[in-house]
Image (cartoon, rainbow, N blue to C red; front, side, top):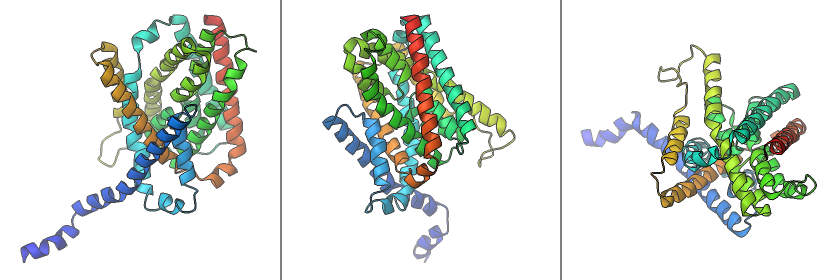
Length: 351
Protein backbone atom coordinates (compact mmCIF):
# COMPACT_ATOMS: atom_id res chain seq x y z
CA UNK A 1 0.00 0.00 0.00
CA UNK A 2 2.83 2.37 0.78
CA UNK A 3 4.28 1.82 -2.67
CA UNK A 4 0.89 2.25 -4.27
CA UNK A 5 0.35 5.48 -2.41
CA UNK A 6 3.83 6.83 -3.16
CA UNK A 7 2.96 8.53 -6.47
CA UNK A 8 0.01 10.24 -4.82
CA UNK A 9 2.19 11.41 -1.96
CA UNK A 10 4.89 12.64 -4.31
CA UNK A 11 2.26 14.48 -6.33
CA UNK A 12 1.66 16.70 -3.34
CA UNK A 13 5.38 17.35 -2.76
CA UNK A 14 7.77 19.89 -4.30
CA UNK A 15 9.82 17.63 -6.58
CA UNK A 16 7.14 17.11 -9.28
CA UNK A 17 6.71 20.90 -9.53
CA UNK A 18 10.42 21.26 -10.30
CA UNK A 19 10.27 18.46 -12.85
CA UNK A 20 7.19 20.06 -14.35
CA UNK A 21 8.95 23.40 -14.80
CA UNK A 22 11.93 21.71 -16.44
CA UNK A 23 9.60 19.76 -18.71
CA UNK A 24 7.83 22.95 -19.75
CA UNK A 25 11.17 24.54 -20.62
CA UNK A 26 12.48 21.87 -22.96
CA UNK A 27 10.28 22.62 -26.03
CA UNK A 28 11.29 26.28 -26.01
CA UNK A 29 14.97 25.51 -25.38
CA UNK A 30 15.05 23.06 -28.28
CA UNK A 31 13.34 25.66 -30.46
CA UNK A 32 16.01 28.22 -29.54
CA UNK A 33 18.74 25.72 -30.45
CA UNK A 34 17.00 25.00 -33.75
CA UNK A 35 16.77 28.74 -34.40
CA UNK A 36 20.51 29.09 -33.79
CA UNK A 37 21.13 26.27 -36.26
CA UNK A 38 19.01 27.99 -38.89
CA UNK A 39 20.88 31.24 -38.25
CA UNK A 40 24.16 29.41 -38.81
CA UNK A 41 22.78 28.15 -42.12
CA UNK A 42 21.76 31.66 -43.17
CA UNK A 43 25.24 32.97 -42.32
CA UNK A 44 26.86 30.11 -44.25
CA UNK A 45 24.75 30.88 -47.33
CA UNK A 46 25.08 34.68 -47.01
CA UNK A 47 28.35 35.47 -45.14
CA UNK A 48 27.54 39.19 -45.11
CA UNK A 49 24.71 38.45 -42.65
CA UNK A 50 26.21 37.84 -39.16
CA UNK A 51 24.92 34.78 -37.34
CA UNK A 52 23.67 36.79 -34.35
CA UNK A 53 21.77 39.20 -36.58
CA UNK A 54 20.11 36.28 -38.36
CA UNK A 55 19.15 34.79 -34.97
CA UNK A 56 17.29 37.92 -33.89
CA UNK A 57 15.48 38.22 -37.22
CA UNK A 58 14.46 34.55 -37.19
CA UNK A 59 13.20 34.90 -33.62
CA UNK A 60 11.07 37.91 -34.58
CA UNK A 61 9.74 36.02 -37.61
CA UNK A 62 8.85 33.00 -35.46
CA UNK A 63 6.83 35.23 -33.13
CA UNK A 64 4.63 36.41 -36.00
CA UNK A 65 4.29 33.44 -38.38
CA UNK A 66 0.67 32.18 -38.23
CA UNK A 67 1.50 28.51 -37.63
CA UNK A 68 4.33 29.17 -35.19
CA UNK A 69 3.37 32.16 -33.08
CA UNK A 70 0.87 30.16 -31.00
CA UNK A 71 3.66 27.86 -29.85
CA UNK A 72 6.11 30.74 -29.33
CA UNK A 73 3.70 32.69 -27.16
CA UNK A 74 2.33 29.61 -25.39
CA UNK A 75 4.05 26.26 -24.71
CA UNK A 76 7.43 27.42 -25.99
CA UNK A 77 7.57 30.68 -24.02
CA UNK A 78 9.13 29.33 -20.77
CA UNK A 79 12.04 27.70 -22.59
CA UNK A 80 12.57 30.62 -24.97
CA UNK A 81 12.68 33.03 -22.03
CA UNK A 82 15.08 30.71 -20.22
CA UNK A 83 17.33 30.65 -23.29
CA UNK A 84 17.32 34.43 -23.41
CA UNK A 85 18.57 34.57 -19.80
CA UNK A 86 20.68 31.53 -18.95
CA UNK A 87 22.30 30.86 -22.32
CA UNK A 88 23.06 34.57 -22.62
CA UNK A 89 24.98 34.50 -19.33
CA UNK A 90 27.08 31.50 -20.35
CA UNK A 91 27.79 33.03 -23.75
CA UNK A 92 28.94 36.29 -22.15
CA UNK A 93 31.35 34.39 -19.89
CA UNK A 94 32.86 32.69 -22.94
CA UNK A 95 33.03 36.08 -24.66
CA UNK A 96 35.81 36.93 -22.19
CA UNK A 97 38.02 34.28 -23.80
CA UNK A 98 38.01 36.35 -26.99
CA UNK A 99 39.69 39.30 -25.30
CA UNK A 100 43.30 39.53 -26.41
CA UNK A 101 44.33 42.00 -23.70
CA UNK A 102 47.98 41.91 -24.72
CA UNK A 103 47.07 42.82 -28.29
CA UNK A 104 44.69 45.53 -27.12
CA UNK A 105 47.38 47.24 -25.06
CA UNK A 106 49.75 47.31 -28.05
CA UNK A 107 47.39 49.76 -29.78
CA UNK A 108 48.61 52.51 -27.47
CA UNK A 109 47.14 54.73 -24.80
CA UNK A 110 45.81 57.22 -27.33
CA UNK A 111 43.52 54.58 -28.79
CA UNK A 112 42.53 53.44 -25.29
CA UNK A 113 41.52 57.01 -24.42
CA UNK A 114 39.61 57.29 -27.69
CA UNK A 115 37.61 54.15 -26.95
CA UNK A 116 36.79 55.39 -23.43
CA UNK A 117 35.59 58.69 -24.88
CA UNK A 118 33.43 56.97 -27.51
CA UNK A 119 31.81 54.65 -24.96
CA UNK A 120 31.17 57.43 -22.43
CA UNK A 121 29.76 59.90 -24.95
CA UNK A 122 27.52 57.31 -26.57
CA UNK A 123 26.26 55.80 -23.32
CA UNK A 124 25.45 58.99 -21.43
CA UNK A 125 24.26 60.88 -24.52
CA UNK A 126 21.88 58.10 -25.55
CA UNK A 127 20.64 57.59 -21.99
CA UNK A 128 19.90 61.31 -21.60
CA UNK A 129 18.12 61.60 -24.95
CA UNK A 130 16.09 58.44 -24.35
CA UNK A 131 14.78 59.86 -21.08
CA UNK A 132 13.93 63.14 -22.77
CA UNK A 133 12.03 61.30 -25.52
CA UNK A 134 9.99 59.46 -22.91
CA UNK A 135 10.82 55.91 -23.93
CA UNK A 136 9.24 53.35 -21.65
CA UNK A 137 10.90 51.28 -18.97
CA UNK A 138 14.57 50.46 -19.31
CA UNK A 139 14.75 51.02 -23.07
CA UNK A 140 17.00 54.12 -22.78
CA UNK A 141 19.46 52.23 -20.56
CA UNK A 142 19.46 49.13 -22.76
CA UNK A 143 19.81 51.00 -26.04
CA UNK A 144 22.59 53.15 -24.61
CA UNK A 145 24.43 50.02 -23.53
CA UNK A 146 23.99 48.27 -26.86
CA UNK A 147 25.25 51.18 -28.93
CA UNK A 148 28.18 52.00 -26.69
CA UNK A 149 29.58 48.51 -26.00
CA UNK A 150 28.74 45.47 -28.11
CA UNK A 151 25.17 45.41 -29.30
CA UNK A 152 22.80 42.64 -28.31
CA UNK A 153 25.31 40.88 -26.04
CA UNK A 154 25.71 44.00 -23.89
CA UNK A 155 21.95 44.52 -23.74
CA UNK A 156 21.52 40.97 -22.51
CA UNK A 157 24.21 41.44 -19.87
CA UNK A 158 22.78 44.68 -18.48
CA UNK A 159 19.21 43.37 -18.55
CA UNK A 160 20.32 40.55 -16.25
CA UNK A 161 21.27 42.98 -13.49
CA UNK A 162 18.58 45.59 -14.14
CA UNK A 163 15.71 43.09 -14.16
CA UNK A 164 14.36 44.67 -17.34
CA UNK A 165 11.06 43.69 -18.88
CA UNK A 166 11.45 41.08 -21.62
CA UNK A 167 9.65 43.24 -24.17
CA UNK A 168 11.98 46.18 -23.45
CA UNK A 169 14.97 43.88 -23.96
CA UNK A 170 13.60 42.47 -27.20
CA UNK A 171 12.70 45.89 -28.61
CA UNK A 172 16.15 47.28 -27.76
CA UNK A 173 17.90 44.28 -29.32
CA UNK A 174 15.81 44.67 -32.48
CA UNK A 175 16.67 48.37 -32.82
CA UNK A 176 20.40 47.98 -32.18
CA UNK A 177 20.54 45.01 -34.53
CA UNK A 178 18.78 46.97 -37.28
CA UNK A 179 21.18 49.92 -37.07
CA UNK A 180 24.21 47.66 -36.84
CA UNK A 181 23.06 45.78 -39.91
CA UNK A 182 22.62 49.03 -41.82
CA UNK A 183 26.20 49.95 -40.87
CA UNK A 184 27.45 46.95 -42.86
CA UNK A 185 26.12 48.55 -46.03
CA UNK A 186 26.58 52.25 -45.23
CA UNK A 187 30.04 52.59 -43.65
CA UNK A 188 32.10 51.10 -46.51
CA UNK A 189 30.53 53.68 -48.83
CA UNK A 190 31.82 56.48 -46.57
CA UNK A 191 35.45 55.37 -46.43
CA UNK A 192 36.47 57.31 -49.54
CA UNK A 193 34.46 60.50 -48.92
CA UNK A 194 35.77 60.69 -45.33
CA UNK A 195 39.37 60.25 -46.48
CA UNK A 196 40.11 57.21 -44.34
CA UNK A 197 42.90 54.78 -45.19
CA UNK A 198 42.32 51.08 -44.64
CA UNK A 199 43.79 50.97 -41.13
CA UNK A 200 41.98 54.13 -40.05
CA UNK A 201 38.75 52.78 -41.51
CA UNK A 202 39.22 49.58 -39.52
CA UNK A 203 39.63 51.52 -36.27
CA UNK A 204 36.59 53.63 -37.08
CA UNK A 205 34.50 50.51 -37.65
CA UNK A 206 35.77 48.90 -34.45
CA UNK A 207 34.93 52.01 -32.44
CA UNK A 208 31.59 52.77 -34.07
CA UNK A 209 29.81 49.51 -34.99
CA UNK A 210 27.88 47.64 -32.33
CA UNK A 211 28.06 43.85 -32.62
CA UNK A 212 31.32 41.92 -33.10
CA UNK A 213 29.91 40.07 -36.10
CA UNK A 214 28.80 43.33 -37.69
CA UNK A 215 32.28 44.78 -37.12
CA UNK A 216 33.85 41.85 -38.97
CA UNK A 217 31.34 42.06 -41.82
CA UNK A 218 31.92 45.81 -42.24
CA UNK A 219 35.70 45.98 -41.84
CA UNK A 220 36.52 43.04 -44.11
CA UNK A 221 35.47 45.14 -47.11
CA UNK A 222 38.75 47.11 -46.71
CA UNK A 223 41.04 44.10 -46.40
CA UNK A 224 42.82 42.03 -43.76
CA UNK A 225 44.68 45.00 -42.25
CA UNK A 226 41.49 46.94 -41.65
CA UNK A 227 39.82 43.84 -40.22
CA UNK A 228 42.63 43.28 -37.72
CA UNK A 229 42.50 46.88 -36.48
CA UNK A 230 38.71 46.79 -36.26
CA UNK A 231 38.65 43.62 -34.16
CA UNK A 232 41.29 44.90 -31.74
CA UNK A 233 39.51 48.22 -31.17
CA UNK A 234 36.21 46.37 -30.83
CA UNK A 235 37.72 44.11 -28.18
CA UNK A 236 38.69 47.19 -26.22
CA UNK A 237 35.03 48.21 -26.17
CA UNK A 238 33.98 44.69 -25.16
CA UNK A 239 36.48 44.88 -22.27
CA UNK A 240 34.40 47.75 -20.84
CA UNK A 241 31.33 45.51 -20.62
CA UNK A 242 32.26 44.13 -17.20
CA UNK A 243 32.79 47.50 -15.45
CA UNK A 244 29.65 48.92 -17.04
CA UNK A 245 27.51 45.98 -15.92
CA UNK A 246 29.07 46.14 -12.46
CA UNK A 247 28.27 49.87 -12.27
CA UNK A 248 24.64 49.24 -13.29
CA UNK A 249 24.40 46.44 -10.73
CA UNK A 250 25.78 48.75 -8.03
CA UNK A 251 23.32 51.50 -8.98
CA UNK A 252 20.39 49.07 -8.91
CA UNK A 253 21.57 47.68 -5.59
CA UNK A 254 21.73 51.19 -4.12
CA UNK A 255 18.27 52.00 -5.50
CA UNK A 256 16.85 48.85 -3.96
CA UNK A 257 18.69 49.23 -0.66
CA UNK A 258 17.22 46.96 1.97
CA UNK A 259 15.53 44.70 -0.60
CA UNK A 260 16.48 41.04 -0.34
CA UNK A 261 16.11 38.21 -2.78
CA UNK A 262 13.66 35.33 -2.29
CA UNK A 263 16.41 33.36 -0.55
CA UNK A 264 16.81 36.13 2.04
CA UNK A 265 20.19 37.29 0.75
CA UNK A 266 21.13 40.67 -0.62
CA UNK A 267 21.94 40.70 -4.34
CA UNK A 268 25.63 40.39 -5.13
CA UNK A 269 27.36 43.70 -5.98
CA UNK A 270 28.95 42.05 -9.05
CA UNK A 271 26.87 39.40 -10.86
CA UNK A 272 28.42 35.95 -11.10
CA UNK A 273 28.49 35.94 -14.88
CA UNK A 274 30.37 39.26 -14.91
CA UNK A 275 32.98 37.77 -12.59
CA UNK A 276 33.14 34.79 -14.94
CA UNK A 277 33.70 37.14 -17.88
CA UNK A 278 36.66 38.75 -16.10
CA UNK A 279 38.13 35.39 -15.09
CA UNK A 280 37.84 34.16 -18.68
CA UNK A 281 39.64 37.27 -19.94
CA UNK A 282 42.43 36.75 -17.42
CA UNK A 283 42.77 33.08 -18.42
CA UNK A 284 43.05 34.15 -22.07
CA UNK A 285 45.74 36.69 -21.14
CA UNK A 286 47.90 33.98 -19.50
CA UNK A 287 48.27 32.17 -22.80
CA UNK A 288 47.71 28.75 -21.22
CA UNK A 289 44.85 27.83 -23.53
CA UNK A 290 45.82 26.33 -26.91
CA UNK A 291 44.37 27.81 -30.11
CA UNK A 292 42.10 24.78 -30.54
CA UNK A 293 40.48 25.37 -27.14
CA UNK A 294 39.95 29.06 -27.93
CA UNK A 295 38.40 28.17 -31.27
CA UNK A 296 36.01 25.68 -29.65
CA UNK A 297 35.09 28.27 -26.99
CA UNK A 298 34.45 30.88 -29.69
CA UNK A 299 32.13 28.55 -31.60
CA UNK A 300 30.31 27.61 -28.41
CA UNK A 301 29.96 31.29 -27.49
CA UNK A 302 28.44 32.10 -30.88
CA UNK A 303 26.03 29.19 -30.64
CA UNK A 304 24.90 30.09 -27.13
CA UNK A 305 24.44 33.77 -27.94
CA UNK A 306 22.60 32.88 -31.14
CA UNK A 307 20.15 30.66 -29.23
CA UNK A 308 19.72 33.36 -26.58
CA UNK A 309 19.07 36.07 -29.16
CA UNK A 310 16.56 33.86 -30.95
CA UNK A 311 14.74 33.59 -27.63
CA UNK A 312 14.86 37.36 -27.15
CA UNK A 313 13.75 38.00 -30.73
CA UNK A 314 10.76 35.71 -30.26
CA UNK A 315 9.54 38.05 -27.52
CA UNK A 316 9.28 41.00 -29.91
CA UNK A 317 5.70 42.11 -30.52
CA UNK A 318 5.65 44.34 -33.60
CA UNK A 319 2.41 46.18 -32.75
CA UNK A 320 4.04 47.26 -29.48
CA UNK A 321 7.12 48.42 -31.37
CA UNK A 322 4.96 50.43 -33.74
CA UNK A 323 3.44 52.38 -30.85
CA UNK A 324 6.86 53.65 -29.75
CA UNK A 325 8.61 53.16 -33.07
CA UNK A 326 9.04 56.83 -33.94
CA UNK A 327 10.71 57.79 -30.69
CA UNK A 328 12.81 54.61 -30.60
CA UNK A 329 13.92 55.10 -34.20
CA UNK A 330 14.88 58.71 -33.46
CA UNK A 331 16.91 57.60 -30.45
CA UNK A 332 18.58 54.86 -32.49
CA UNK A 333 19.55 57.19 -35.33
CA UNK A 334 20.78 59.83 -32.87
CA UNK A 335 22.89 57.28 -30.98
CA UNK A 336 24.26 56.00 -34.28
CA UNK A 337 25.25 59.54 -35.28
CA UNK A 338 26.93 60.11 -31.90
CA UNK A 339 28.97 56.91 -31.91
CA UNK A 340 29.98 57.35 -35.55
CA UNK A 341 30.89 61.03 -35.13
CA UNK A 342 32.84 60.70 -31.89
CA UNK A 343 34.71 57.62 -33.11
CA UNK A 344 35.57 59.34 -36.42
CA UNK A 345 36.98 62.35 -34.56
CA UNK A 346 38.88 60.01 -32.25
CA UNK A 347 40.42 58.12 -35.15
CA UNK A 348 41.57 61.33 -36.81
CA UNK A 349 43.27 62.38 -33.57
CA UNK A 350 45.00 59.05 -32.88
CA UNK A 351 46.06 57.67 -36.28
